[in-house]
Amino acid sequence: MHTKIYNTEENLLNTSAKIQLNADGSFNADVVVKSYGTQYRGALGLEEATEKNQKLRFKDNWDYINDLDITSVAYTNNKRDIEFTENVSVSARNYASKTGKRLLLKPNVFNKLAHVPPRYTNRTMPVQIDRGFIDTDTYQINLENGLEVEALQKDVALETKFGSYYSSIKEEEDGSLTYTRKLTYNKGIYPKEDYHAYRDFWIAISKLDNAKIALLINI
Image: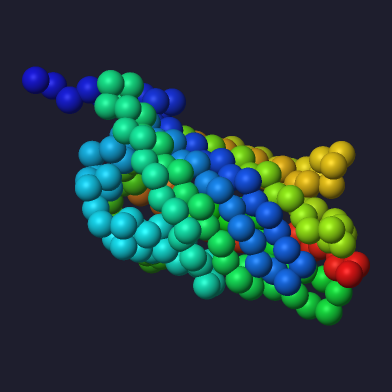
């Protein structure tokens, strides 16, 4: 028996969320995470874990969110189509930082790049990416009455041989915000001389994932 070889396009992690942001910087959110291909999480034993360990896993994944409370967790495991769905309800205090009459918000709430490759002065080995993948994220951010947009980020698009990154945040007619993000990571072997450019790609993504927007508090 041979293990199926998945193309980059099949190794998907799709995260969507409906977020209610409050003027004190707290939020409530319903999050849906769908995983496929080599990102499929159905074989990790998550369904059989205790409720405590299920919640601890999300707290570990989102450890950059202060005072995170996991309200509920539910899973749907479609083994035939290799699709695993995680439904999570969460809340947090002091996620957005308040400065005077402004609230500074990092709109990428649930999928920040956590790892940046280490710095090497004398790299001796090539850069080898064994598995490509695609992450897509879409968050609807509803603002409490009295919050309004002061400044948004511009759309960002990065294209490199190692992969690509796109992010956007838009204000909708009803005053809510829509944040979208797509990260594509390309399988391949690259010469050692490319390592600095490879590392720079991840550093740029990390900075963009942590970028802030400014909201005015008129309450």
